[in-house]
Image (cartoon, rainbow, N blue to C red; front, side, top):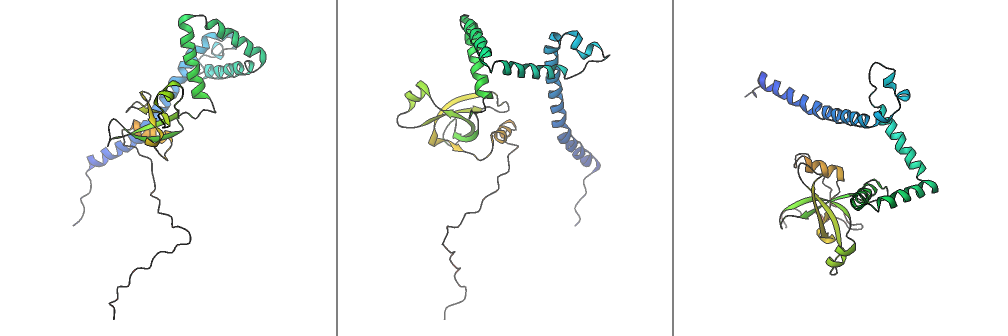
Amino acid sequence: MKASRPSGMTRLRNYFLTGLVIAGPIGITLYLTWSLIQWVDGWVKPFIPAVYNPDTYLPFPVPGFGLIVAFFALTLVGFFTANIAGRTLLAYGESVLGRMPLVRNLYSGLKQIFETVLSERSNTFKKAGLIEYPRQGLWAIVFVATDTKGEVSHRLSGGREYISVFLPTTPNPTSGFLLFVPRDEVIELEMSVEEAAKLVISAGLVSPEFPKKLPVKAPGKKSAKPASLEPAD
């Protein structure tokens, strides 16, 4: 019996879905990139003198020029603050902000977040893991942050080692919960944090490949021969 061929509408729907899968991520990526460039240009270009702004001489705006200027400006700020004079000026500015009741809390919090996220020496979110949450028998993906420190570690220790983990929500992994979990209750995964984030965002639909590894034979041991199927005399 011959298998029935798909109808014309079925093939048309499959072609459409295939095109959507290919064009959707590309289109969204280009849209977000273009939106970021326009957002930076809108902030930076008004501060560029007209004599240095190419939009003054061209009949059309140059996209991305503000982003380039912002990149070089931030690089120069980092260069000047790397020497003694720059660090002294920065310390003086921070001391002024430290006298402002509301601004100092906002500045110190934002500075700590940026230093933690952008520091090359930070181990923030370098591993993904599994914990039982919200009850036993149910498992959730977490991002391992760091060892629990300070008063929280002192209050919880009780002879056990705790680590700080971030439990993201689906489909928005930027929101979630900070949990302090005993290290021995966290199952570390081999998948990267990026792969775990894709798994969370897709609600389990996009799962990274994990080839099943064969058990390794112990050295010096030979596998037992199968028993003979011939009848004994």
